[in-house]
Length: 99
Image 1 (cartoon, one colour):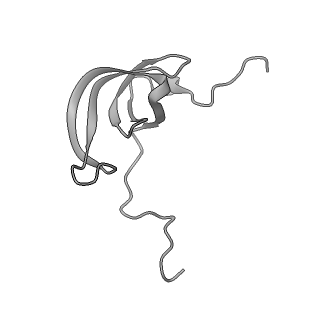
Image 2 (spheres, one colour):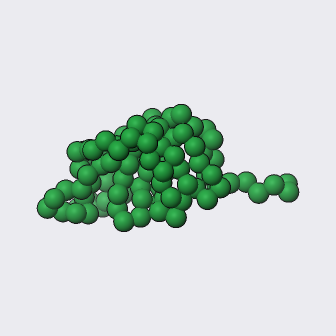
Image 3 (cartoon, helix red, strand yellow):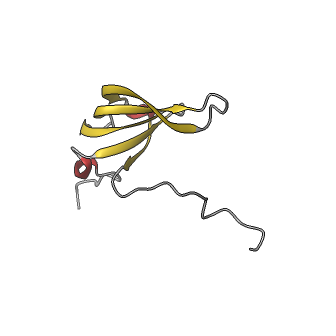
């Protein structure tokens, strides 16, 4: 194989919802409209998840609309699909007293 494969194939997420974590702690969610080899992303109908005012490390469910956004590839930490994901009430990897 002479062609190098990308570790992240974003083509399957085009026109689908994705959640993106950015360096600095911001999180946005929108519809992936485009990307390039440097992982610059174009998101439409984007909303930003706001941080908790008492605990700035915690993201809340409160959002603000951003619209069309370009995320610089150098700031992208994680891209995940919104379809098929759910938030767990408890960390399954946390040890309990009975373990």
